[in-house]
Image (tube, rainbow, N blue to C red; front, side, top):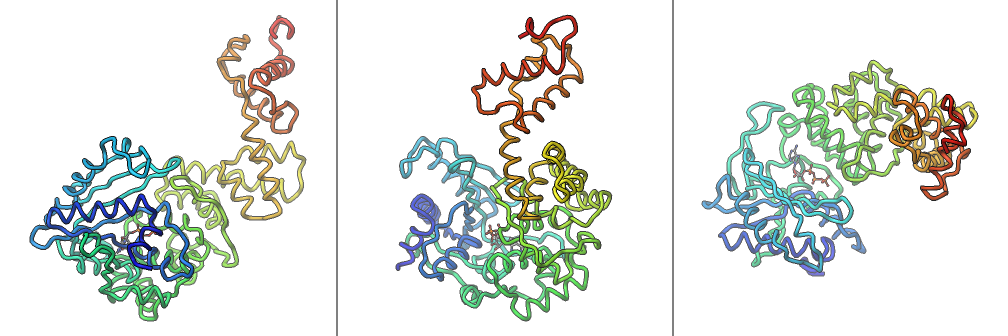
Length: 458
Ligand code: ATP
């Protein structure tokens, strides 16, 4: 099949149309636009797999602009501005009206820009624009010094040959592959290969990235690459990167479908001890949880990784991983209440007790339990479904209207309603109005208002 047709099939009609427009817009200004990195790698992987039917969805597009003498630090930003102007009016493409809500961001410091298209649900298609650049590493682990360069320079600064691939988008050469480091061949051989000996020392996050791509595609590290990686680990290269960058790559790993494979590799290379020397990773483990873009379910993977750490060491990890307040709360709350929930499950506690412990856990703590032991999956699933329906219809305002003076009693009452609904002692299948009436009756019976009869209040 011709590359163009295949691109249309794999990227989908809408994204294919956008790529064509990008190429044309660049050419009009005497520039050349390339699609680079991950999308090209995955496009070729699709092409190599037979039959090639997989559509690439939810994939961001990275665009690099080249232009010889014409190239300046603002080139990519200006081109993205021009495309944003074309795309943002109320124009319809493929029968959809998403152009109305597209967004534009400029990152002046890096000479880059991003256009964001809303997709189905809460998804966004991100198109990143950068000018082609040459990099120089002043010292290991530091961010590189950057200057404009040609497309080959831009590919040479990348992590692995399989990511150092570009597709020309200009009308005359649309679909032509730029593969100056033999990446396509490495894709065929299923190899992860760095571009030069100092790669892991220049940027040790590549150690984590090597585990991510090898785990995701079930690729091996090419012999020299593995030697250089191990040398860099021995030299403690990972200590030279910032916590934030370490976090970003670890999170990417934990978001992978095959994150257990990636973690196995990190365990083999003794990288997990950089996170904490007390981590004991069980290589027979599989991790199976759904990841939606933007959610925090990757924390389930983190919980599995740190399952042997006590509360205090877990707190240290939350700092080392630069967790946000919300993420930190999820991890620490899980750490605090998981032992009781595990005990309740293992010792077959009554449903009342079990549900009490389960309701103290955040969503990720519950998923963790389901992943840890498949015998519990159904039980946890039932609890999750009931929990969603058990939310009281009554709220503080209603309790005030009934006549309860505001105070800690509100929390107690609402918790009680939640508990009885969880256990099925109050119906959850009625209309909102009927449920409310039942809840009011229940509350008045169990929390009598002094001097007023239940009948009068109801
Ligand atoms: P994914 O399929 O997970 O989105 P990706 O290849 O798009 O994978 P990103 O982390 O988004 O991965 O990086 C985009 C591109 O930027 C990569 O393909 C790679 O070429 C380049 N890149 C990212 N991080 C590095 C790095 N640390 N060193 C060199 N190149 C990098």
